Image (tube, rainbow, N blue to C red; front, side, top):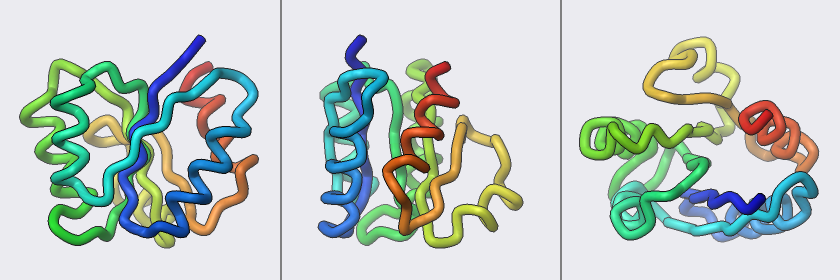
Length: 125
């Protein structure tokens, strides 16, 4: 089964890390879309609403992760796209935010592909 993942990340280095990790995910074939900030991500959602997961960086220029998530839930509430927050402070965010606003997982950066794969397995099991 093919799934579509939107990676919202401003760092080219982390975009490459996601590309490698998602390409090696064995359970499903993944189509990966990229956006460098929340504003670009909203445009991606507008164009391609059949997204199975958004991996969302927290700190980005133009529109950060929390502002994007607020707009996504307000303007595209009917899509119910699950979101994985990715941050160097992901574990602290998990304790603060929890499962609100459709956040289904937290990924601590930097990450190993197996960590991302385990979170994907948990989301799509």
